[in-house]
Length: 196
Image (cartoon, rainbow, N blue to C red; front, side, top):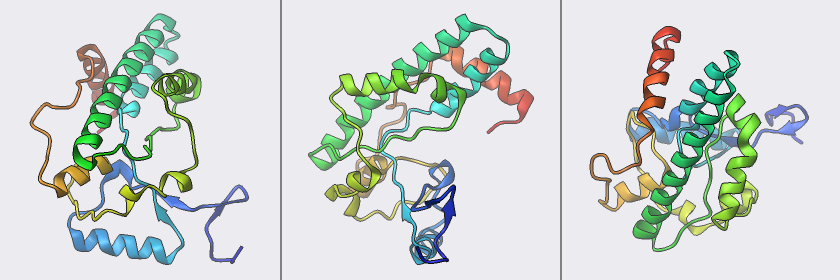
């Protein structure tokens, strides 16, 4: 491998996902970042499924630190139900916007929730007919070559971007809501820990 290729633990780093899916304040900034990344041998990792696992993960971690296994399971069930609703939402939206459903890319985070229960999420995806493939294979889908000029301080999925490009934004409150009790717990934790 060339010496200038970024590496971690013996692996070449190939992909970059924008933190918070925030691609910059304007299109010029976004294009500048894309050029920089391409010049350093990175491909941008898109996201089509975002079920806000990080949000549930905070509540799960709080229950785990308090050794409240009943609460942990309650969070897991809420997260899985919300994930299923978000998968429904984005599958339908993709078929509306693109006519076909692309090879999906799931956003998942390195948290206790994912570490201890990703197998539950994987089972949910397999029940829906999904199989796991590499990101390289997923990016061969023609959808990922579509024009994308979206910029905003609100991070959204690629499916959202393509919808906006075609003048098909979501009506207000279209996406499935997180259970209120999870929101309340997250807000309480965020107030103490100063989370976003």
